[in-house]
Amino acid sequence: MSKRLTPIDTEVVARRTHDLGLKDLGSASIREIKKIIDLIEADTGQKFIRMEMGVPGLPALQVGVAAQIQALKDGVAAIYPDIQGIPELKHEIARFVKLFLDVEVEAEHCIPTVGSMMGGMAAFMTVNRMWGDREGTLYLDPGFPVQKQQCKLLGHGYMSFDVYNYRGDKLGPKLESYLKTGKVSSILYCSPNNPSWICFTDAELRTIGELATRYNVIVVEDLAYFAMDFRHDYGKPGKPPYQPTVAKYTQNYILLISSSKAFSYAGERIGMMVLSDQVWNLQSPDLLRYYSSNQLGHALVFGAVYAISAGTSHSAQYALAAMLKAVNNGDIDFVAEVREYGEKAKVMKRLFVENGFKIVYDKDLEEPVADGFYFTFSYPGLSGGELLSELVHYGISAITLGITGSEHTEGLRACTSLTKREQFPMLEERLKRFRKDHPVA
Ligand SMILES: Cc1ncc(COP(=O)(O)O)c(C=O)c1O
Image (cartoon, rainbow, N blue to C red):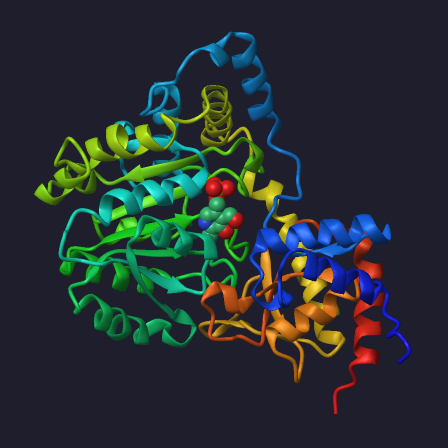
């Protein structure tokens, strides 16, 4: 049988998939796909259009880099940071929350974490252990797969549903059907959403907040893509519009604010965790099963954060403090810095659609979904796994929506960040070739 001719050698793809012990690419995790594509690129010498991983494609905010270098020169590398974070950072986080969310919080209840990843872990480790008779987290999917992995490895239960079909007025009854079971300790979602890029409206956040209060459940709101719904300018300190948040509608909240995308600071693994005063002061005898204190804030800092990592990199805390200070003072418009992702998404989506692909999550309630860090797509007649396995032969990588808890198992998620504008002609050419080889009836 003659070998199928595709831009990327089929034998290399088959060998590398097999070497990594994977049956097919459909069920591979984000990091597994990254690894395979790295290997195929090295073997073939051909560059892919890399869309699998949500890595920032922009340089880190320089004010952070400069402050971090200075902190290292000043000797902080030798010194353990306080677990709860350095005072100047805590102060700037509380200011940021006030200026960009219009929410008042105590600086003491703002904790730096080793990325929002660790914030989520610490939240599950404490909140999900507050009530011995509950099971764990309700995820509003689609979502970031590793956050479920966190619950899994802690031995917590979880529930989830794809929120796309339950937007607006449908959200409340659906949410309540889970909360009524009495088994939910926490609700986790990300807005703007990874992977679908839908954004909850204030009305929906009110629904989530009011139900959380009624059922005494803690909302863990993941703001990994803070202010990146570019349809609105959420980037002016102290001025509306503000990034929508559940914190306006309930006191039962923990916010996870990542510096990875908003400030392009992913490499230093620093994020922020913000607890409402009410959540901080919650008490439960069931916490004593794991912690020396029955109070949530104390258990979180001196139990969870201490045991996981004994705090967050000292120099990175100075970096984040300096970035926040500049942003809070209005010296840097961090939203303008990342707007490029949305601009690129517009072009990339067009190239896909012109070549027979469909945008999977295309609506945000009545509006078209915003252009941002991610978009989702499918191709007629192929499942997500089949589409990914095929696209890899054309030098294009992404992840399947199946692994995100999405009901749309025919789709893939594309991240816009690493594709450079200079690569658009190559992307177009590869998509055209794909279409030619996969004619649609
Ligand atoms: C939804 C979501 N939450 C959290 C994270 C991780 O953030 P961090 O780098 O701050 O750990 C990501 C990163 O891609 C994400 O997409």
